[in-house]
Length: 353
Image (cartoon, rainbow, N blue to C red; front, side, top):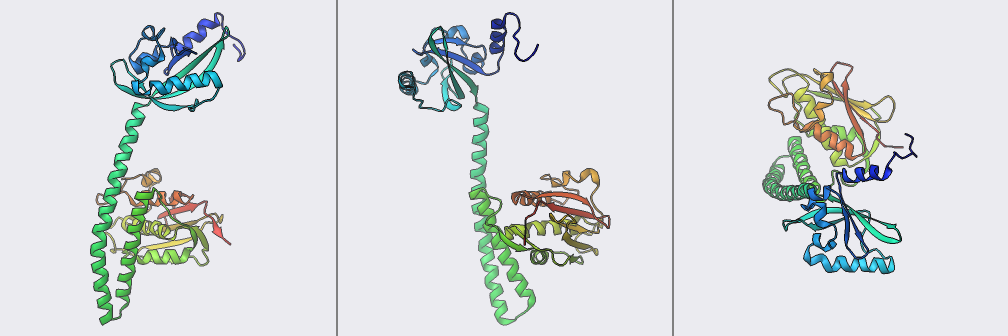
């Protein structure tokens, strides 16, 4: 059967299609009388089709909304002016047992023997509403948690900064300068957490960021033990949120020193080299190490939230790295480095100049 032919008894064919549809279908005339309802309506509203046909559409409309519905249909029949979105509008419908059902309704008008009819396609969106409510509750709890976290961190942070300033008045040392930089970094991270919670953004304003400067600053914020960093000269300048790019590098460095060796003593117990450079194609950059590497079968799973190859690991570091990369419009993948260690390639990066 080609796309333009109809089976024998095509009226029965289309009736079967309509009556087997998963969505509810209900047709009214210009006086709001229900002239057709398919079986799926019963699944949504509890009424068998024969209980609705011949009744007013007001039977399935909550009482408080009946005047609005009546006026809307009357206005459209007289003037052709639509007061709602016919492509899809969420409206409550009245179930047979009296409770309201959230539905999504799309409308179509058609004529038959000179009479006007209106057919609504009805979908039950109760489950979607439930998920939306859950997400809203989770968001509210996240906002509350972020506020508490920020408050509880900033209090001891302020104390630590005060004592650091007193110590620097007595003695100038590079170690105290590093402590101040670390405290400033914590303060910026708190701001980032609040921005993510309140505004739903994973990155803020972007601008030119020198890659080598960002890499070395991030390295200084991580406990790297005996590991060393080698940066290819002339990496260039990228367009990024500087704070979040530093966070991306920090998580990659922590992953390298914590997972780059099978040594059970952990961070600082081994000599590891981490190097960073431009990709040969010039479309991105990489961070690699000469540690134990990542089995090929696990190179996608490592970016999943909660995945970790160590019992003490949180499994969030590389998940955050991917989120930060994707928030910038970049892609990230894992591969094997030249020294059989782990190599992370960030692509689709916009360089300046």
